[in-house]
Length: 285
Ligand code: A2P
Image (cartoon, helix red, strand yellow):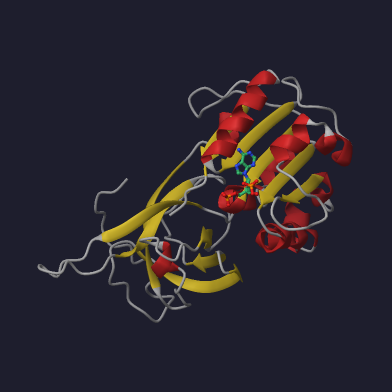
């Protein structure tokens, strides 16, 4: 995933700047949510095909080497937050003040260029799951990103009667990006026309915070184990017959939830062997 590939200049005619980086794409929009979180959009290479939920390597050129002056790309895996049908690409990122990439990436502005290796991969895809009635998307922090894509993917609503999205963050402000995406579905004319008017009523959204007061406090893992989440959502407990799940968050969260799903009788799936749940870690700087 890290070898050099030819310059992608598909967008060169549509934007004022001529790409000078390998695999350059142009930033079109940036939004900041908290001092730790931001999202941005960029142009999409005409040749890039991906499945909603997958990730790509993106980044910037690193600082010049002090002796040789040579610069190397600084790349990290980022889930694509936009759906596969979208003309642009969207990403949701943490800002780490001393992080090699995000200390710089957080300062990008429309018109700037980023590097994007057009080789999407990942396990959080519908192809890795067998048919079921309900899908659970379990996220912490920036792990919401692949679900921002999948929540805008028509197949999610074709495949399932119910879509439950849980998002656990430290602070209330960290829920804003996800909440905005879900709210936007209600007025998205294109999606309501393509998927069916009111498709978003299939969604049950369950945001929780752990370090700041909000409507629902606590880790989703604890809320499920105590049965509180089921009661709040008005749903039956997880079962292998009906439920499918995707997990994306920090490592401890992924492992804990994976154990919980296994204990409930769900089996882990993969692209090569679809089953009942899939897991991916959020890609932090
Ligand atoms: P907590 O504040 O109790 O650690 P982070 O920003 O560190 O990645 O965490 C994002 C969110 O995930 C926080 O609300 C954090 O809760 C929660 N979290 C961290 N580890 C786990 C875990 N093992 N199970 C459930 N939630 C977790």
